[in-house]
Image: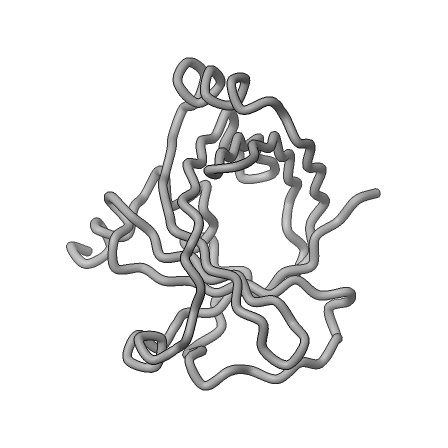
Length: 158
């Protein structure tokens, strides 16, 4: 079974401003299904598009199946079948031979910046960059699918 082992962290925004980074990639991401036990996502970047199916997370691990699809199919799925959507700019930062994917969210999630690192095992050790703040792995509100339903802009009002 294909699986993803991923840990999520919030960013120290002051430190993040000083990080040397290449140009980010704009992502348009929509959900065809946002069930607590599974999601079906369509993601479109400037160059590629993907259909992704994810299962229930147990710790930092969950089943994941991802398939590249034609850009036009992704646009049609996003425009006609997506029940919720978000946009973000993704940066890939290499730190001590590990790739950190840092998402600066846009729209209703502006102000939220989350870093993710994919691992080979849940107990794999790695060094944390100075621009990382607190870990939020397993906190449901930080799942992208949940951010489309309960966006970051609403958190401050609760």
